[in-house]
Length: 403
Image (tube, rainbow, N blue to C red):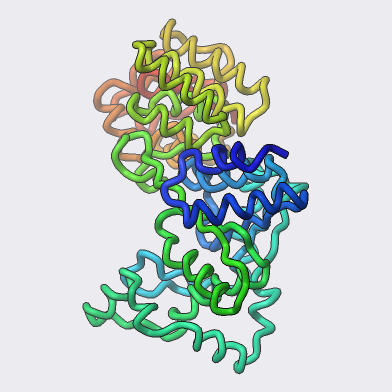
């Protein structure tokens, strides 16, 4: 196990806010002396199971602590999911059914284990303990905070001031999420900056119930490929953790130069010393494209095997430098009933080859889409796609259709 100070360097890399640093060092020193791992908690609301690199920022930080030898517990909020996290919502969220929660949780686990070590990760469902609380227990839990404290949350405050209904049950969400920390005796809890209120509530409840307080670590929001907006699938500026290696590599190469270091800090497990070297190289005038090429190789390698990474690099090099059709390109299996170009657009969007139907149509009108090296026009939208056809979308996106 690394020394506490060296662990601090790794844990603090890329962090937005840490509450509090002195307490964390004390915990790490005790852990080191007793050779006893800290308990790291991450709560997941199973309502949006499609993970991209923006979501994975927190998971990568947890993976780094997992590699340091600490115990990781993922809490699936199957019980709290029935209420729905009101964070950032202008109105109450519709509660999830048991079936929706279970299906989303399954999909979530499949994706988080692309980052975390499944054999070293505990997955718990907070219904294990929350469903066993009596009404008396719930009243005692509610007595640990005040309405004024709950209304400090911006979303509740805004809804209250604008006379938008707030259900009393919504007040219990942060309390129940905090109770998860009590149950696990969490030493550290992580989340995005949008989870500040919920995670700090865990610290408050632990102190009230005379339990050692958890450290709160908040990771920054990751900008997407546009370099401006938060990474989001709906905005089309995302890199999905389940996307093909060729698509992932190409997308990383589209990251704006000014975000290269931030992506190294938040989306890779590179040591702080290595990132300092990369900063120095950029400052010394090294071509950002060369640095980004290494970044693309590292990120793609975190989610794909070495063979797929090599294929992605070859694909990118051929498409980018030679402007030819690469020999080894992604293949898309087309349903026999979906034969026209217009019919396959949703699948192209789902696989990340194009952001939206409007973008595809715009590219077609601009002459930016080719089928078998022939430019398509808007009149070709109903043209039948044949087996082994190759489509080029934009400058570097290729896909071969297989029926």
